[in-house]
Image (tube, rainbow, N blue to C red):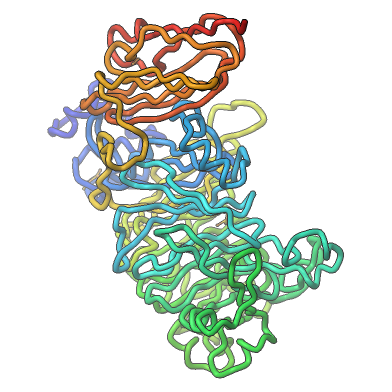
Length: 630
Ligand code: K7E
Ligand code: RUQ
Ligand code: CUA
């Protein structure tokens, strides 16, 4: 049934098994069909059936690499997931706020102390992974992600793809938004969502008028909170402008209420535009109050700092309960939209600095559909906004919306904007969406992922908790329109993502011992040092043994193992797992980790390696002998 065979077809194992005719009918296999013509990202122009089936070349043959990394948050799983795009294969998981045994994260001394110092919580709620940039382009250094549950921000080192710092942000509960001030990632902003008394020390509990929320400016190098700004109302999502001046945050509770009906009673809320250099000047001039060790600047509407010529925070009225806000790649507009109103509000960033009334900087308010949440960009002048209630992604033309304003001002909000180009169904109820490099000055404009909260009937049932559905959509062809290419079940719960061209990252294949503080243990440095109830075991590991075949300690001893994997060969990992002691530390090539525990039960314990590292992997085990106390 295969009429002509191209090299791509030969490479594709599916082609050897499925007659082409059947294959064309299989809508679900549409992604794989792309290899028919072997080109990247173009629609078939010679076969309408294929085009109708959504034939876009997203197929990444076995052994070949994706074009992009996507970093997705894991919500209340507390982690980051790394996908390859366009295959949507999950390449790696990076634990951030919770322990994870396969990577030994939170088990070795370094990472368990980091988690302990960051508050000692066992979980977090990651929403917004943002990758550091230099000159408005990804620089491959770090990713940052918030913890909504406990008011924290974490940094992930993109050389090793591991969390290397967490800051517990003072005065902030429910750090929701996270984003970088560009062009050069001067700050990472944490956006406080839950309004609390300031300070939240039990003195002032019952007057919600006095509750407040802040944004926190975090230095990406030191992960110190440099300053905070407190505001009226709450805050939600945030995005930084690309020329270093403005930071934007939505807020859905200008009412300062504490109940759902109270929070949604007013018809408008605000986007707050923080004038970062003006805030820095105020901090410099000492115009702050130090609260819990952080300079806190008063950015409420009636504050002294907001009544002069250059207010530090500009309050822009936007329709009811805005949620998402993002800055266009050209830094011209900040676009915000909300759950309870069908419009998006387009704020002209340049005008914001010039007008007396910040509402005069609003240059468009297109009606898009029900429940517009988040907006991404293709770099060709289009915005893509998720419609949570309509279960759609709407593509619209930003300049067309600006041209149509204010004549298109909706009366009852039911007149769709002439700027709307097209809508595509997604399955179902999308939260964020993200386009390739949408957060940079130069989006790639080919792939978009819609992060859908519900999957309902899309996958085999797996019990009452359904997977979510990350859908891949091709947006590279304005004439043919958006094409839904792939469904990807995902574990709860991705919110936002960043998609980075693969060539902008350069991850290490083995560790460089210079990059960590633990002592590198050469085979001839193996040692057991005993003093006063503490035993320090220094040993190496390699295929297929640990440095000691047995280690004997006394009941009640505190035991520290320092273990180096001396392998140079990439991908040959070992671990040190100790039964009944809750120990499992991961040891990648050239990596050293330490683990400390108390040997409190006499007996024999087989310390083993949990990575299947060689044919003699099962034999890679040594005895820990715990002798009874006298
Ligand atoms: Cu809309 Cu936290 Cu950005 Cu969830 S947030 S979707
Ligand atoms: S396709 S014209 Cu079926 Cu990817 Cu290329
Ligand atoms: Cu080392 Cu298995």
